[in-house]
Image (cartoon, rainbow, N blue to C red):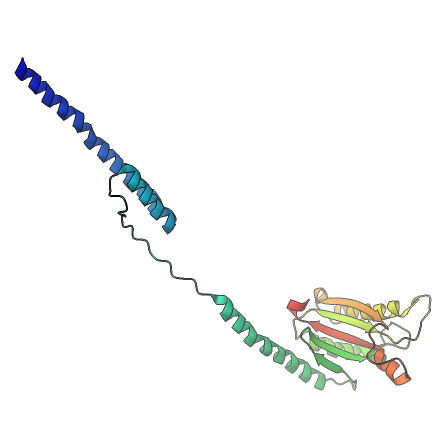
Length: 246
């Protein structure tokens, strides 16, 4: 009887500890499974490290603080291209301005018409200004046939420069009160619109590039104190607007 009790005691001890082996195998497989899930997904290094530490500490399989080495390919730092882009833009900007000035300068010099065209360049773009008498009779907005050839040549200039175009009409301060033009606002606007229409319908220029505005007498170049100054204030201006300014 005593010998049998000893045998049963040894059997119970063996059975009571044998399940630990299976449990350890199961836990190890679970750990490997979760590690594989993380390695197959997009790895966040910090989160992965926190996961490893929590898993190791909670299961007690590895010593607390010991880390399993998972080799993650270091991402190369993304180069900051903003500075290089800014430098490239700063280099190309003067080149574009020089190109525009060169095109306009050569084109204006080659015009057949003996017209005084004032060209100015600003940060906004280029401004071509000429007297209204080149295109219009006094107090009228219909383009003279003599002005068709001039506008045809101007169209050849602006078609070479792919910027939006604003046509501006300006008058002097002499009041106008007609049925068609109650004030200089209507006169200057009608002139600008007619120039736009000519470029689009007669010169086949791209309509989306154009806009028209009439300033009346509000933006004089000179004081309206003499016939000469008033004549210079009566003008049409063609503004080529740079893309970033439109």
